[in-house]
Length: 291
Image (cartoon, rainbow, N blue to C red; front, side, top):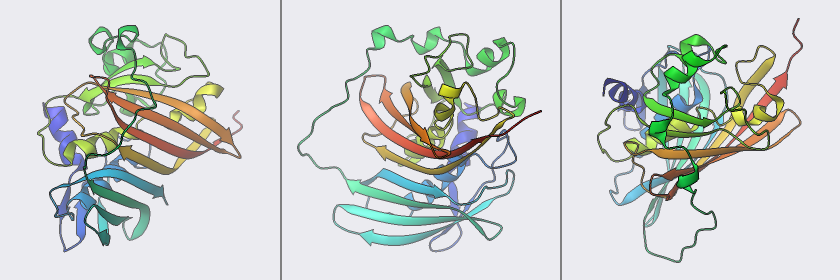
């Protein structure tokens, strides 16, 4: 319960002006820079607070990471109202840290109306996928490995999500290099069902390992000593209401890597097999020479 409560407070921002919000500093990011999901979630939550039409729901974000943030220092978010129509509202959010512009995000909100629909992506066959309760917790998994693949301050800290890894290159189950990282996630404790909070929490989670998939074909991770890697942009679509108290199945895959850039994609289903979200991330990565 405590872990989920801390995570929920982390993604929330506090209104300090008409369209200005303060965000809590990040911590234990596994590097000197801020975890990107922290910025994405807080920027999205700031935008949500400026949409007064209760019938509109956050359905898409597109963000560009402009500079690296510094772990342990707070953020200020400035929201610009781009449009407020009958069906859609759009907001532009700029994130600042010590007067440095580090992120720009556009959030779109819409009213849900009945219309034509189809589903091109088949639901996963959960009978062929290990159930989350049959898999070790993230902490147990990390401690079972002969060599921890990430910085220990990241690998062993409480992340606020209960993550059960099905497939990853650093587990005992060797990953097919044509595939990607797959996992079950849910909040590590109960999260109140406040409007837009669960969406913000999924946005926070969406950056956790998406870019890692670009490195999978090369047998590397973001913490490999020879790897330099930064996220460039992040796009996400929320198709259905999100409930992070439910187990969510995240299936990720690398799409391409060329010219020092790579693109990865993820689909998220709830435990009933309903596709609730899709996200994409592009990252810059370089392999440096090491001694």
